[in-house]
Amino acid sequence: MIGLAEYIWLDGTKPTKQLRSKSKVIDIDDEAEEVTLEHFPDWSFDGSSTAQSEGHFSDLLLKPAFVCLDPLRGDGNYLVLCEVYDNDGTPHASNTRALLRHLLAKGGQDHDPWIGFEQEYAFFKEGRPLGWPTTGSPKPQGPYYCAVGSEKIFGRDIVEEHSQACMDADLLLFGTNAEVMPGQWEFQLGYRGSEEEDIDILTVSDQLWVARWLLCRIAEDYEVTVSFDNKPMKGDWNGAGCHTNFSTKHTRTPKVGLKAIEDATARLREKHKEHIAVYGHGLEERLTGHHETCSIHEFRSGVADRGASVRVPSHVKQQGCGYLEDRRPGSNCDPYEVSSRLIATICNLDYALQPKKEEAKAIA
Image 1 (spheres, one colour):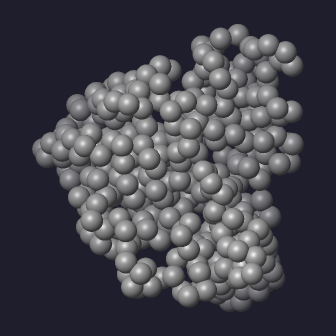
Image 2 (cartoon, rainbow, N blue to C red; image 1 turned 180 degrees about the vertical axis):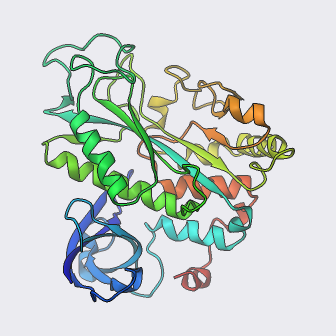
């Protein structure tokens, strides 16, 4: 069957990587029992146009890493998330997915890490958040969170379409809700309680990038832009985060789970600065100690405390095992970097954060 594969990758834009994509015509045998990565060949692109190479030697490679159905184009079409490689066969410097794979191979996978992301974002149109008056500001935050009604909710059509697209693509969408600022929303991605779903940390990190791409692509049709800025609007408004729920086989084990969470939190405290460094650009504008955040300059943990750096949900405390919520990652964070840093800290794999060149070739 002839179809289209949308090759998606992360560019080299600084301080925050941007999503790029281009379409490739593919022909997959109708007799194929299952469509896998092997059906999608490597492809090249001009890295000089994506801040990833110089013009005099610009060819870079896209190596397919994750594939799902394309819910926008329909049957026979696919979304293909790729890693970027140099021509010498090693991961490009911008390829943070390769580092996560490396850490998992170096012992991270032995801890069976799970992760879930709570992605906040804001819709903008004509330079202001969707639903905001042309002059001044709307009424203060309070009535908009999880609200209903056209005077409080803006952009639901996009959110509904995005939710359906994620489900049609078989992504691990957990839920959605309107946030505290008009035009601001959240979706959650991760474990949903089914033992049949693939919930490993690499897959969930891949899916967050695909879900972000789908959101931006759908918003195009409404002439709306999606902001992942940590502080989309200055003033007395919440910022936008990407709260991250993390667990290991030890934290999920009854009787020892709470102790494992306490130990993990102690390690996170010691490595606070290292985490802040990779949790998103402009994080200081959001982590002020106000608007449900802890100051970027301190680390605090607590049960059911949404003003803490790391929160232990009430039900986790009650049942004695489960996960912790790292509330520091920003809306524009790279989930591969967040996942890598959490594994390195909690699983004591800091030594493996910088793979040698020969190791990079080995994981290619």
